[in-house]
Amino acid sequence: MKKRERGFIYGASVLVCANLVAKLIGALYKLPLTALIGSEGMGYFNTAYSFCNVFYSAITVGIPVAVSKLTAEYAAKSNLIMVQKVRKAAHSAFFYIGFAASLLMMIFASQLANLIGNPQSVYAITAIGPSVLFVCLMSVERGYWQGLGNMYPTAISEIVLSAVKLAAGMAIASYMISSHSLMSVAAGGAVAGVTLGTAGAYLWMRIRRLFRSKSIGEYNCSTVELEISGKEKRSILAEILRISVPVTIGASVVSLTGLIDVATIIRRLCDGGMSDVQANYVYGNYTGFAMPLFNLAPALIMAVGTTIIPVLSAAKTQGDRVKMEETVNGALTLSSFLALPASIGLSALSFPILKLLYPLRIDEVALSAPLLQTLSLAGFFVCITAVTNSVLQSLGYGKIPVYAMIAGAAVKTAANFILVGMPEVGIRGAAYATIMCYFVTATVNLFAIISKAGIRVQLLQTVIKPVIPSVAMGFAASAVYRATDVKMGDGAVIFAIFTAIFVYFALSALFYKKNIINIIKKRQ
Image 1 (cartoon, rainbow, N blue to C red):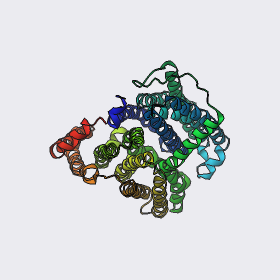
Image 2 (image 1 turned 30 degrees about the horizontal axis):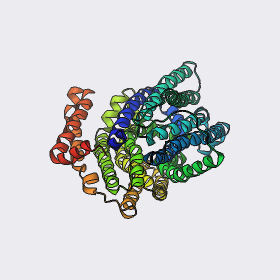
Image 3 (image 1 turned 135 degrees about the vertical axis):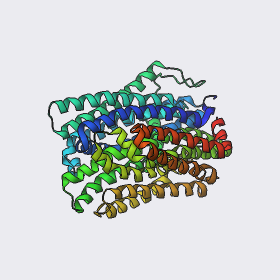
Image 4 (image 1 turned 45 degrees about the vertical axis):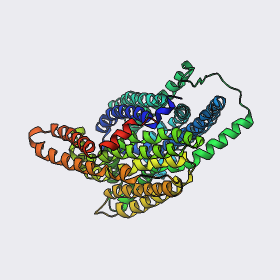
């Protein structure tokens, strides 16, 4: 059990590092891709990706959470035969589910493109369709290993996915551009890289399991196929669905905001007086320039939510309330200390960062920087939402994140409809609406953890304390950039970022030394 006792801090560190590498690779994909196909192409690309991201969010959270939770519970009881049966039953069922979803998406790609008001995105939607199958299968494998306390397979699969996506997507898109294809077709070629990336990641995980018969310390998890009756399979799948359905609905708030944007932004911009082409261009700025940077910090920090699920599930099975409370408070503290400085720092340096990344697209940068400045402030609430979702799901309150999501989505939809349609606000309304959405969702979740689950959340230590060094860091970063911009040029933003990092950690160490030491030392 020694590796399992390292707890979520160790697992979160593995996933955060892997996600960081994957996002750096992804930046090597998104940045030159945006430069290659521009705002028009990114509009088509992100229309398809945002639509499919609803399925991704559901699959990559719901399935792994259910498989991980069941695996952790059976492993805590040393029932390793059931651990293997859970994996086998899930893999069989979600193959057929993923295959059907992929097939339907490709068949009805044209109808879906027309439904969301962007008919030229049909090629991108068709190209991304098969990825749903591979994501389903990969998610089962991830949940299996996560439930056993091993985060390395998930971590490496993220890197494989990003690397294949980079190589294949850029190669296909470049070929399409050189062949003078329509921009919508080139965007479809770029999206094909996403599908190939998911296929490569699943293939790696499958090969790894075939060649690694013994792993996870004393857990002898053999790959020998076990006999499983139809009754057992139905029982396991019913349990997986019981756990995954509310988890899936609750987790969909992250991608649902993107779908709400797809469904409302272009239409409401047109209602405000823009043409279809102008609306797609503005939407391309929002999704192609502001959104990728906004999503960076939440994507890294969501690993914390992933790793606490098996730890909390095992603690609940063993009736260890002390460990449950320590895990919840540790996860919230870690998330806050990472998410707050990331959100505030990105807001303070939104224009210089975009300018550094897209030096040849100054017009788009000028339009996107105010959007990113506002949007990035929602990053903290996104991270708290992800962690609190995982806490409630692990403790058996999976329906509450659903109610929180519904409340947040209702706020997002109403705010989008009202604000984006106002010519004086326009696309900025979507950024304001995103902040409102995640604030409501995170608040409902935190209240439920305290009142329903009975967990004593130390809000001062976990959420409020990091505000002081984060705000000071933001002011320092902005001041340093303004003071050095003329003399240092592009180097000013790099200098400002390193100054911000130094200020944040110096203030954290000065004022919250004991809190930080406790986080680092915890190896539950």
